[in-house]
Image (cartoon, rainbow, N blue to C red; front, side, top):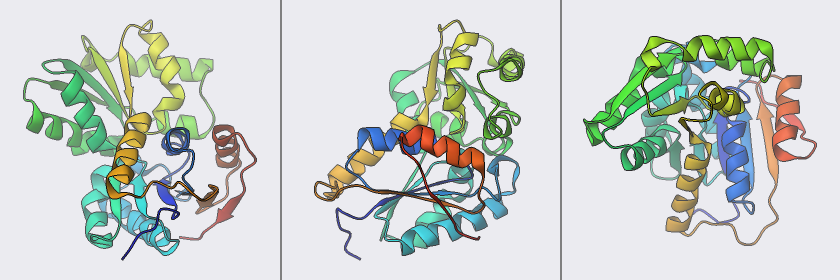
Length: 268
């Protein structure tokens, strides 16, 4: 299947978290069109079984393929750990699948050799051990201290950030002994950049906070350059699909993209 430069980029997540990745892509690649799928019926993915996440991901990938996407970005750590290999098999060699984990692993290996690195994420991501395993394969001298923080994604989806409730929940998690003496912190959930400032404030801005949005956008740009697929002609468009309409998603999408966003419901 021959891909064209003008075809859109497909991005998906369980909800608004992946919008942090979509926003970074828009900022780094402003000429690219994008189709975003928020699986709001099933959010969050972090407490779902691997089989369930795989089933949701295949259905979404099928939608994005049929809509002509030239590349698909899994803007969700839980789906990246559970469904990445399956999706690669599903689309075969026609379309590149980019996940949010591998670009972050490469960054950590390159910038934090022989360091103590913390990680916070959903139960699914932490239990998978995917970050620690992949980092250890590249450098056994990097120690990853992982902590599941299951309240954070639902809290963010409900709009609770930058307030007293979020401050207290974040502080309770980050004070956990598991995260003591770390030199950097991986935000292993695409929702978490929305509370990056609060997390940084907890550490008095003295800790390197690593979020995957810009890292993934750069990996996408490098792929499109390598394959000669950078869009240099058409006026970009943005299409937002959701499995269920939510006001919070619509508001968040409009905030990120600085324009009124129309959501199209696509039943899963």
